[in-house]
Length: 186
Image (cartoon, rainbow, N blue to C red; front, side, top):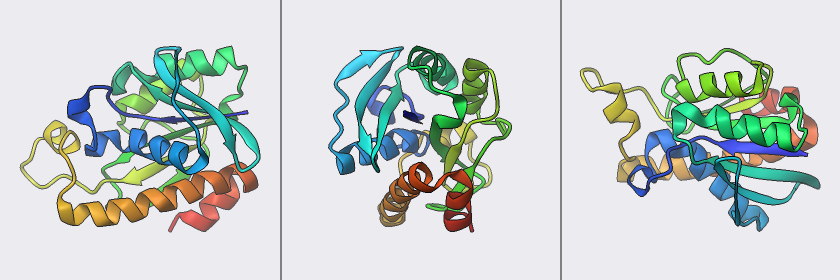
């Protein structure tokens, strides 16, 4: 079984912001694969289903971004899922808009949601898909930038990136993280 968790913040005011791209990605995976978020467990919204022939648990932590590890850690423990089968989807300001970067493991890199997940899983050894939201404009507050919505022009790029990210997650499930890195990073 795979746990695929998208990071974001639960209030409607954060919907479709840069920082909530993880929620948008799991929503797109759910829609594409006929999975419904119909359960509230482990401090998150949960949807169970099949993607690429494998059982999956799609998760949207309802703990706010900086405490995501509580939800993800509880779900991984409850379903006895090894960290190597927990895929985290989240925003990255160091990547150009819509660009993807898959990693097998690594540090938090300054992302508080990932820092919390490392604590919740007790390891840095879990795959992740970073979705580029672009760097903040000079002089703008980082929080204001990541909690801001995409412009109309940016939305076209984001939509294509969301489709590509869904393909990448499905590819990770079938072919593994290394193969997905070779195919989608770059």
